[in-house]
Each structure stands twice: as structure tokens, then as C-alpha cells.
Length: 83
Image (tube, rainbow, N blue to C red; front, side, top):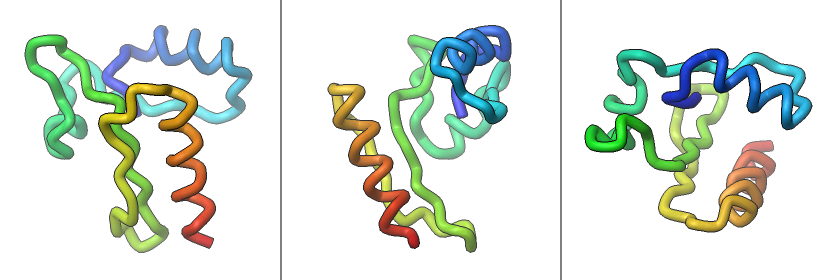
């Protein structure tokens, strides 16, 4: 989920070759605010990944990882641990 509007997400999905729909938290940012990751000054959320299991329990949070590749690697590892 992103605080970006739908067209920006569409461009990102196209660029990355994603074959699934992305979810927008725009324009009210309710989810980002509820999860405590919304920055009011920047009108954007921090790069945070919540890994949630099938029952809705947050199992892992990846936050404050400045390197995008490291963030993705850690997130994917957490998802793989769910199985």
C-alpha cells in the first residue's frame, strides 16, 4: 500500500512488470495514519513493510532500512518464514 495516487502506482507497476493491482491509501492516508507511519510534513508514509499472516497478525515489521534492496530482501525473507 502506498500513499501515492493511482496513476503513480500504475506507472510504478508497469515499470516493475507487476501483474497484480497495488493498493492506494490516497487521498486520506487512513491506513498509514492507523499504522503510525504517516509523515504529516511530507504528506507521505515512511518505507515500512508489515508482514501479516493469514489470520491478520503482524509477524514482522521492516522499518528504517535506508537501502531499498536490503529492505526488500528482509521483507521477502520474513514472508518466506510464514510458510
